[in-house]
Image (cartoon, rainbow, N blue to C red; front, side, top):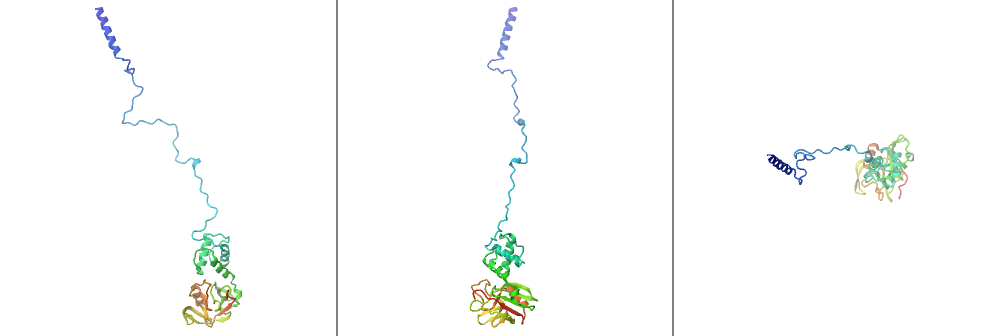
Length: 271
C-alpha cells in the first residue's frame, strides 16, 4: 500500500513539471501591459510645453514701412524745366489755386498750372511748366496797366510788346490781361489812339476770304476778332488785326461799344 502511494506521488510531480516548460519562460505570467482595443484612440502623452500664442512673438513683428520724406511727382503731371518761374508767375497773377514757389511739382501746383493752360488754350493741358507756359505767364506778369494811359474812360489796351490786351475803366483793369496775336512782319498793327466802330457778329474779309467772328473795327481794315488759327503759333500772325481767344472775344464784344477808346502801344517782337 505504501509503495502504491509513493508511485502515485511521483506521477503527480512529473505532470506538474510539464506545465512550466522552460522554453516558454512567460508561460503562466501576466504581460507588462494590456494593449488598448483597436476601436478606441490612444491618448497622446502629456506635454509640458505651452501651446503657441495666436499673436506673433515680438521678435518677429515686422517693422512699419517708412514713409517717403517727399511726395512723388503726380502721375501724368511731370515737372517742367521752368517750374519755379511759372510757380512765381501764377502766385503773382493769382486766381489759379494754391501754388508753392519752391521749384518742385506737387498735386496743387499741377492743378494750378493745368487751370492756367486751359484758360489760355496752351496745348497740351498737362500741368508741365514748359517753354510756352513760361512765355505766356511772363507776358501777362509784365503787362503794366500804367503803360496804357487810359485815364478814367472805358478803354481797350493792346500791348504789342508782350502780345497782351486788357480792358480798363475808372483807371482800373476790369478784364484781363489776356493773350492776343497782332500783325506779323509786313502787316504790323499800328500804334496810336483809336475808337471802336463797325461792329459785326460775323464779318467777311474780302481781302483774305475768311469769316471774322465778333468783328470790331479799330482802324482801316484792322480790328478785334476771334482767332481763326491757333493763337500761340507765333511763326505767323494776323494781317494787322488783334486776334482774341473765343472766351476773350465774347467778353470784348459784350463790354466794348461803338466809340469805346482803344490804345495800342509797344512793338511786336520780330516786326
